[in-house]
Length: 114
Length: 111
Image (cartoon, each protein chain N blue to C red):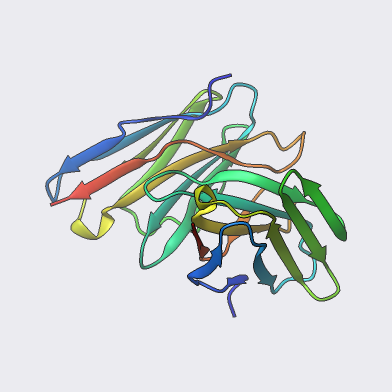
């Protein structure tokens, strides 16, 4: 079975540019999570969706960040405009909350904002 | 107080020894508990989940949960150099799947 798929795996951009990260959850999973990981702050939950509906976006750092889940098999995290402090690894995870709460992570997108 | 606390380590153990990793959590209503392993440059990988008090064994791994004392631990028997990684503890306390992660404990298994 395919796991969580994220793209791109690496992204280097310049300050002020728009960045879009993409995620395809595991088929059949009904919850999707976006995390950010840095050395200083560890793993932080940004936002999560249940059945494509955003449930908690309290971790989104500011209005420059937005996330959408237009259908059960696709989600995006957008940063506009990007700043150097956004440099981090962004993970997407999914789970099937009807079969337990275990979350499975994608490989991550390493974002570098110059 | 952080939701989930872990000693950052590094915890160094010799090959073949038992590695003991600990995690405490602050909210008594926490329901589900998870251990993830993360190799450097990789994503977190789920290795154990535990939902009720007591021990749960899976191969060389044993998770222990004590809700009264609000801690969960992970024991790794016969530690191997390939077990060297950061181990993240995660706690879920509601019905919406939200996890609270600890900052992780770095484990070094020396040959």
